[in-house]
Length: 534
Figure 1 (cartoon, helix red, strand yellow):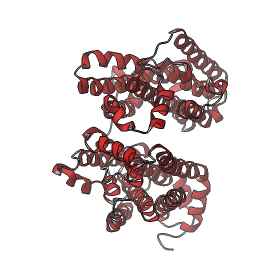
Figure 2: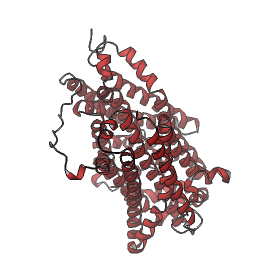
Figure 3: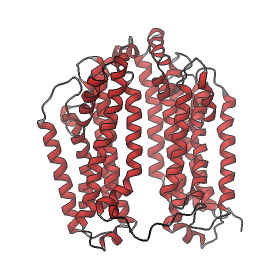
Figure 4: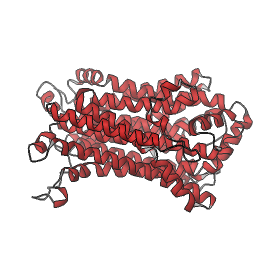
């Protein structure tokens, strides 16, 4: 029996298990890239409009750091700037989740030990995880190429950006394979691989911020996300650059296979540190445990909100130059953010998007309750003097406070960047901080839906919680632009939040949203008291 025996059967099983997740990831990423190209064709129909938009980008370091370098003002190059680096980042996340799920997570859950008792080789599970990640990225690359070519962009550049995104995802599949060998748990492996992905994006941002003046642009060659930009899709199509992620992925995957042969099943190469014999007083409550479990993730969410708030807020004062002659884009911004001036409308639309981000954080924290329950980690806690309401309520408190912190970080970053660009940071910081926190009641309503489903319909809480967030996002992002029926837009709690900054509105809708969030959370807690655990 070879070390890869049984791989064919396992990859069929893995593809069947992940068919829903894979379709969702690939569909969303493809639609994001292709819809960006399609919308840009309508927004920037003339060379003058594209030149105006591009000139506003290449002279702003913060904007370049966000999307990567811009090599010319062609329609394709603008699409790559807008969606290229972000799609590569998302493809890396997809690959990390796929590989960790079928390696370290299955190992941690005991499934690989059961499978390993049959005629399955030692490296079969690792090979299956990596191959499934590779296959997903190949399909993604082909669909991006086909979609961009169908809407009329040059086939060569479309193939270049599709392959650049796909090979970046393949590289991070290999990185995740190494992380699965090093870490002793799935959570640590994901954190390690995502840390490498985040560092790659930050290095790309530093290189791109140098603009066209040289300087630290060499940093782009040190980052796998930077390699995506260096392919120069629609701006010369530098095909040899694609060999970098492919070769690097092969080397890193070989390292993962070598490490897999040197460790025991269920153990990581870096052993976990033994904890103290007794818990500190600061950990002797359900709230302290919830904080310990969530603090690292909250720091990541808040840090990302601060950085993106600053990057996007820095361009608010000059948003008119980005819109240029594209009046259609200006109309989109004002429909999303109100009619109180283009800069304020842009900032109000930005706050709505950060409200969705905060809602996503709230949903993820609430659904942690379900994962703790299904992994049977809740039972040992509830077997002590901890009550169900105290255990679940602690996570809900963290969800509320964490969502407020994420919004505060976004408002602070946006206010500082926007204020410093105009010399009035003292005025803009509290103004945008308040605008961001006004989104909190709506974000908590979405989190409350997940909490109610957890208590009343636990088997549906994961899908239902994320579906509620997806519905709110569709209404916020597409409702005003597509002029959807008002009754449909009213389904989203974010529709009832005042368009701040710049707009006017009553605090009564915010109070009602807060009451609805409390009622949903109370319903979930009441249901939890009456149902069986597990």
